[in-house]
Length: 282
Ligand SMILES: [Zn+2]
Image (cartoon, rainbow, N blue to C red; front, side, top):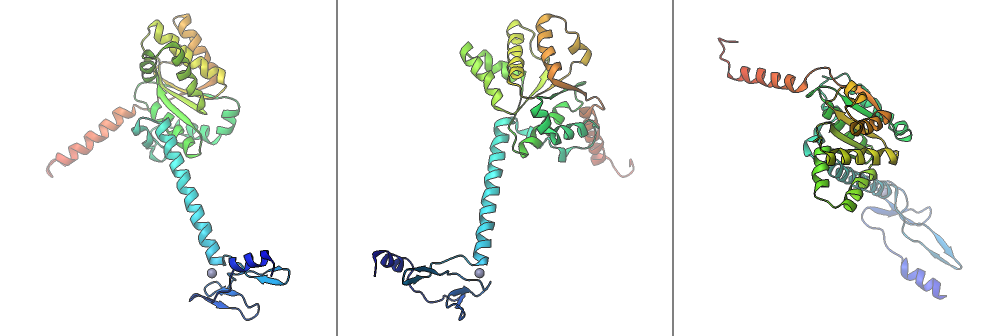
């Protein structure tokens, strides 16, 4: 016996069928009693025949299912990590298209942005969600963020108050790195442009963030309480160079249908009144 035959014989010794197996008389191999497919195959090596194990159909299907479940869990973990990193305010995780109450017809356009993401990304097209306070601009922007993250797109949603707080505690060289780090994300969403302090430092940093994004040729979504007219006709050059870049890359979308905060408050008050009313009052 050659040494390879010895090794093969040692690796695949003859074995008896287990409880859930039988020997198929047609080929002498061990078969699965459940799916009736072989759990051995035949390999001829010179004058020696060895019968290494193979998976029967039901073992293979079970393994494929386990692998698919593992991959699904891995994907869920990945998306969870992307949400934690991109949407650091936990409440934003609940701002999804599924949770939309239908107050804003603009939500359809936001869904369209997600459906057309490949084109938006390719052409570096963002959105400028503008309108009065409490009309749901943050909600709509976060819906887009959540939906894109679910599709595996990296999104960072932040605001200038946070950015300026971080930047004011940094040295210049770190500031640049911090601002550049936003460009690792395929989509940057900045909530509430225009509420930041109008100091020279603040305006300079806001410009740096917007300009860095502009130069990265990656999409940007901005929400603002400013009107389109205020954005188009800023009071000075410092504001103009910020807003010009935003207007060049972001499609304005007016979100001004109803004041959602007031609507929610009215609904809550109505429910509370019912809770405390007596039968005579109803
Ligand atoms: Zn089987």
